[in-house]
Image 1: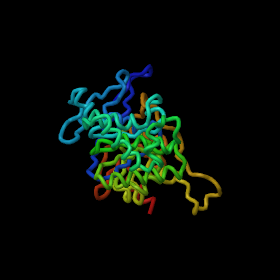
Image 2: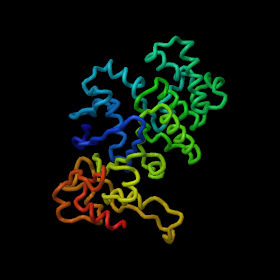
Image 3: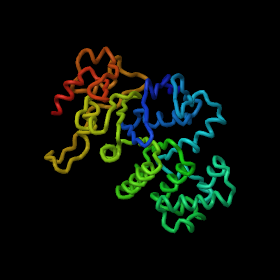
Length: 318
């Protein structure tokens, strides 16, 4: 997926490939601008065109390539078979429609329910996501609800038509820590009960450690490491992953009050280094890293990483 800008063509997502299975929780992590959200929007075919476009590849869902579907067919997939929860519900919810009407709308479109049937089902959904006094809240507008309640409404809308895949794009970032935990527990509960595949897009590694089965680590538009959450945490093979993990505050560690960080800045996607995109920030970098961009290779059982020095990275953590 690329964007045409005044600085040139920006490849926001390049050679990204991953699968997510029924009932599985896959986390996609990385710093801002690494391509996490663009990957999700590409799956949903919601890339704004222009300036963006999906130039190549395939997106298989339910045996069909989503890139080959007509706009009408894709509209049936969105909301009906794939649901998405965005970071800020106030920009996703319609400010002049009641909460009940917004939950009922996809039910009328995708399930062919009557208005009364859709509103009854909407009330049930609002109750199921833990909104207190749900039936009274049906007539409220988004601005009358708290941030946590609005995000619960977004979950109700996303799950209204029993999707097979749910994508949560930084769905808890704008919420306080307590509400974050409640929303995540709710998402996990719903997906476990319905066997829905869940993709969590986040920069919060604490979320990954607690909830994800598998993890994809993205940097500069590409997946740099992928594996089970346990393997990626305990046996990181890419220096970027190791840097992210070392940056997580540890209350038990003695750091003299200093927080670890990854030196340097995210590269300009319009002017990437010739070799590995992480090389300018990498403490393991060798001459080869400056001239050759490594491909993903096996570093363990169902564990891959794109790093020439993967063995050294893993050895340094033991």
